[in-house]
Image 1 (cartoon, rainbow, N blue to C red):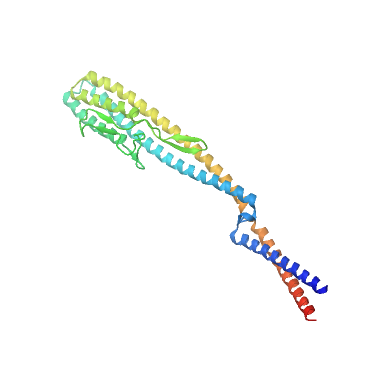
Image 2: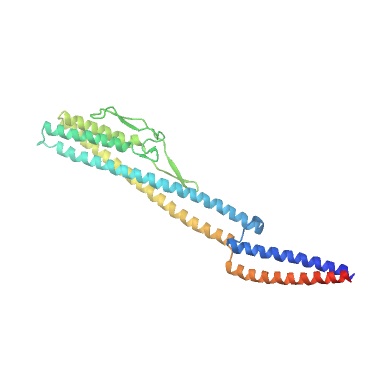
Length: 296
């Protein structure tokens, strides 16, 4: 009976020793990695929550990339509208100058040459490309949307884009348009500039006056478009700030779930190491006693 009791005690001590060693190993893992959850079995519920939060964090990261792309696209569009505004402003200045009775046919012909260069500049602006996409071409993003029928003295500028709307996802169920209808924005501009140039070449003050009025309307449309792009940019900035806040919140929650309390772990490590040494000592004594009893 004594021998059986001794064997049972030894078995229990061995089991306790193994448990103590396992707990010490877990604490050492947490100290080494700085993480409270190193495997799903450490905290199944906490691990499930953390995985869900990591998925949400990845989605936020993707939306932040979309926002940065949207900011860049809107920035390029705004810069293009600024350039178009300068073209129209210069054309209006020349219209006022050309409508003066002190300017003769030769003077108007010289102005016509500058207007022709402005037509070419407007076409270059309309064909602006960013990231491989023609920003005023709608869905037809790989080809130039505006094609003059001649390198100089063009009589018509053909639009080969479409009214497709390009959007970027910037939030949960929230997207932003990053392009403008190129035909609606530039079509009138080309018509007005060509009519103005032709009126100058024919020394027709009535045509020059009509073109001047049309250019004013074109400038107003360009200004409204720039205001719209500015409003979209502000909306994207607000979405960016909101996502940044959500990201910080999620990162904090994940840290609370996954990160180990290293101060507490250091205390636990000392306690479990002490417990292991005690278990080893008790097991060693039990094995020695059992061996002596067996030899007797």
